[in-house]
Amino acid sequence: MPPPRTLHRTTWRRTAYALLALPVGLACVPLSLLGAPTARWQRGLVRRFLGPDLPGTARAGGLPHALLATPLNLLTALITLYGWVIVPMNLGWPLRAGSDYSAAWGGPTFAGAWAFHAVVGGIGFLLLMPWVVRGLTAVQLRVAGALLSRLS
Image (cartoon, rainbow, N blue to C red; front, side, top):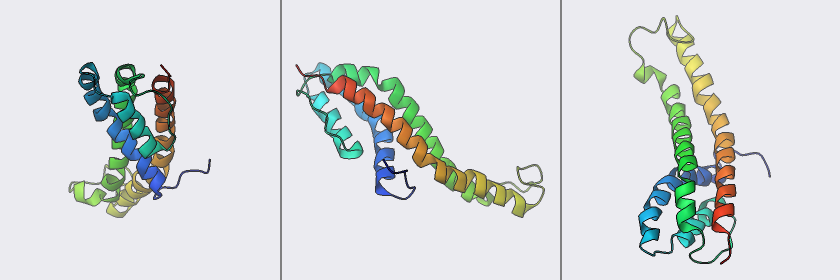
């Protein structure tokens, strides 16, 4: 697999999956108890955003996947959301900085503090987050493959 690129659609599709897997999984718990084909919906989410088509029957693994993947989905969503929010926060550091920037990282000058935040927190996270999201969604894909690909 080639290395992830920051502004490539694959990165943003993986990011979307990382953020959508938690609410979809939580919604699938009560719906699967009511008999809805949640395994098919979860496999469709994987296929739409991560690519591979997971084989399985319509009802195989919907509730177990929704329950067992919730902690991983929560951790993935939090890390992904935090990591991507850091980028514009640090690129726009002067908008959130107070009047005293002498103690800020990169200070005591305004230009030094802004440059430090922009390079380390802005550009650094912009280059790092595709790798982080790729790793987290690879684990999610393995869990989905293990729990949703069973044949009845």
